[in-house]
Image 1 (cartoon, rainbow, N blue to C red):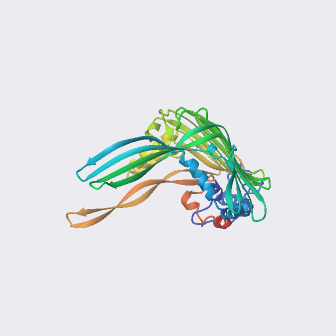
Image 2 (image 1 turned 135 degrees about the vertical axis):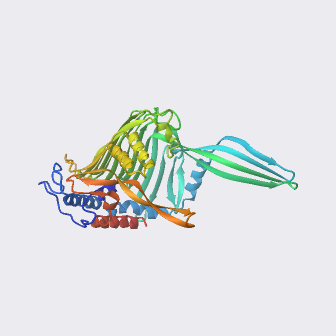
Image 3 (image 1 turned 180 degrees about the vertical axis):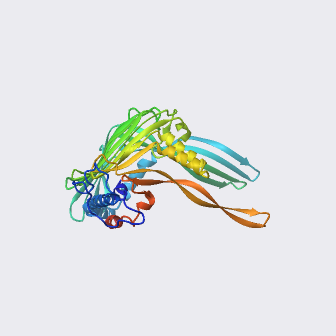
Length: 462
C-alpha cells in the first residue's frame, strides 16, 4: 500500500518531473476538485505531494520508545523460558503411523527403509505462565494461570508487561508438512544393519476465537493486537473453499497508530471481502477494500494455513469478479473492477500460446483487457485521471542451429510477443510502462524521502 502511495503515475518517460511539488488546478488545492481530468504534469505533482506527505507522517522516531525496549530485553537470560517452551512443545509430537517401504537382506548386510508420519499441534492456549526477570534472568513465578505474561523493569526503571491471552473455542487448522530423514546404523559383529527413516510431520495450529496481545509501560498501553474469528463453520483441519465459511477481524495498535482489518469474510462458493484501514491519531492514512463474487468451485478445494496444497485444475469452470479500492490520505484513489477473473487468466494464457503470431497475440490481449477496468482518481472525485491495462510489446529472441550446408553454427533472430502493465493518462496525452515510469528518475524526491525513512527505521532496530 505504501508503494502505491509513493509511485503511482505521472509525466513523460523522457522528461521526468523530478522534485516538482506544485499543486493542481481546479480551485481545491493539489489535485483539483477530482471532478476534472488534470494534465499529466499536474497529476505527477499531486501524486508526489501526496506520497511525500504520507512518508512524513510515519517517522521512525514515533517508535523509538517501543523499540528501545528491545535492547534491554536482549540482555536478559532466556534459558528458563527456552526450557519451559521446549518441554511443552516436545509433548505435542504424536506418532500417526510407521511402515516398512523396502528391505534388502544380504549375507553380510541388511538395509531397511521406513516412512513415519507424525503430527505436532501448536496450541497457543497451552503456553501459560507468568515470568519475571530476577537477577538478570527470566524466572517462571506462577504457572497456575490462564494467560502468558512477561514483566520486567528496564534500564530507566520503567515497568514493562507483555501479556497474551486467548478466549473461546480453539479450532485446529493444518499449517504445513515438513519432511526429514533420519538414519540408524549398527554392526552386530557379523553383519551391518542400516535403517533409513523418512519422517513426515504435519504441523497443526490452534486458532482461538479471540486472541489478545498487550504491551504496557507503567500501566499505559504501548501496543496491542486483537484477533477475533468465527470458526464454527470450518468443518475440517483444512479450510475447504467449496463449503466452509469464515468471518474474522483484527486490530494492531502501536501508540497512536492503528491498523484495523475490520472485515475478513468468506462465504463458500459465493463471496469474499476484506476491508483494512491505517490511521494515526484517528486520521486515515491508507485504506484498502476488496470484494469478490464467484461460483462454480469443485469440491473439495482445501487450503492449508500457509500452503496452497490443492490442484489448480479444481478451479476450472469457476468464475467470479472482484472490486478493489485503495485510498491514500483521501487524496489518491486506485479503484476498479476485474470481471470474470478466470476468463481473464485464460485469455492471458491463450495469448502466451500464440506469442509468435502478432495479430493473434494482440487479439487475445485485447480480449483480456475487456475484463479489466482499473483507474486512478483524485480527492474521491468522479474523473478518471488515468487507467491501467495490459499492452502487448514485441521482443527479440535468438536461436542457434547447425547448418549442414555451410558446416557452421547459425544465429537466427526472431520476434515474439509479451505483455506489460501500462498506464494511460485521462487527457489521452500519453501512456507509460509502469515499470519504466515508476522509477527513481521520475520521482527523485519521493525515493529520496523513502530511502531516508528506511534508513531511519533500520538504525532504530540496529
